Image (cartoon, rainbow, N blue to C red; front, top):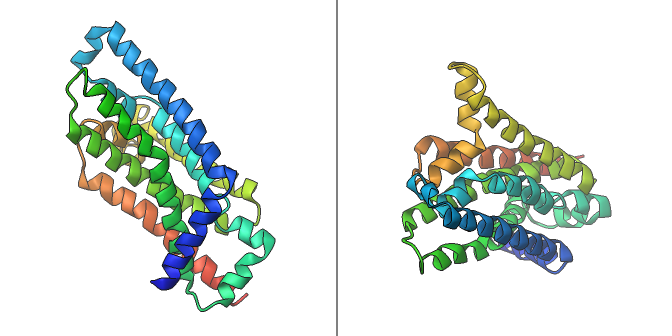
Length: 248
């Protein structure tokens, strides 16, 4: 546990003492603010839109903003987790210490999760702003963040695994972005294929479908199991890869 916490603190420092996380945060704040403002303006100028969903449901579940955020943020945050340390040779010093591969991987992964959560923290102001002019369904807000955090955790885990497979941050970014893009494309198949195995599979992995469900206050066990699996499998494989470096 001590080794895991030490790795977590080391990774958080390496993320937030460099411009990367701050640039991501600034970019995300600007894009989030623009998207949310445009959605609120649309609802204000078209009152009929409120018959189906509210601005919060539209922001969290119906806009392409959240999936595109995953595609942009998760690979960028995770690309340097192991790739940079392998390139510079500092991973050898880390692995020569009495630290297990699991502690190293989990420490880095938890640091990414904390950073991902911090990036989304300012969006909590949006329901507080809307509360002064409309009724806010806090259950919807809570479940929306459950969906965002669950998918984000899975995509960060994929990013960590991709980072263990190369010494290049750029290649790690490309690999993880490709995998995330594949999930987005597969989700489109939910509305393309006829009822059957392919349609069911695409529905199961569809990012937008999960976000739309959680934005309506629905948290299904099927979706949560998918998110946990999406996180656990890449992290397990990452531990195995890192552990293999000790013997190579």
